[in-house]
Amino acid sequence: MKQHLVERELTAEGPRRRAGATGPSRHRRVTVNIAESPLSWLHAHGHIDDRLFDAGERLRADYERAQLGPNVTMRWDPVRIKGSADQGLSVTERVIAARTRFHGALAQAGRGLEDILWRVVCAGESLPVAEKSLEWPARSGKLVLKLALDRVADFYRIT
Image (cartoon, rainbow, N blue to C red; front, side, top):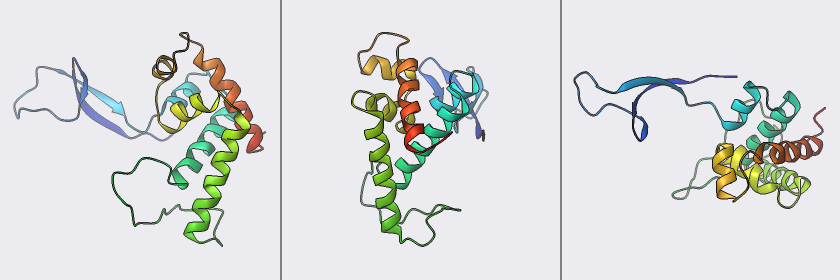
């Protein structure tokens, strides 16, 4: 798992990006891995196996390739992905293919499971936050997420 470590000042509200004063800080400083996602945390702590982690990463990659994330304004730059298997396709064809795979994976997961998939895998919400926003009982999200990722792994034919 790749790491991108950054120092942050820890305040009552959470990690602050930079200290406001130039002098020594009275707050504690912490190192944060900003490359870590909730899915990679679950995998690193043994809550999901390699197959489910790979399925989640494939789904997130298709989400990003399909350019489905929120945009503030119009984007004119094409998505550039190194080592892509779709070398013979144009940029538009790659986006359409990724969008088709993404929606196919969500359809394979089924109704009710696509919500937890999108929130944890694509939006990067933690399981407790996703459970609360979906009004689910505490600690139920991990089981539902495993079921959804298992179906997504079947869609991507990950063994």
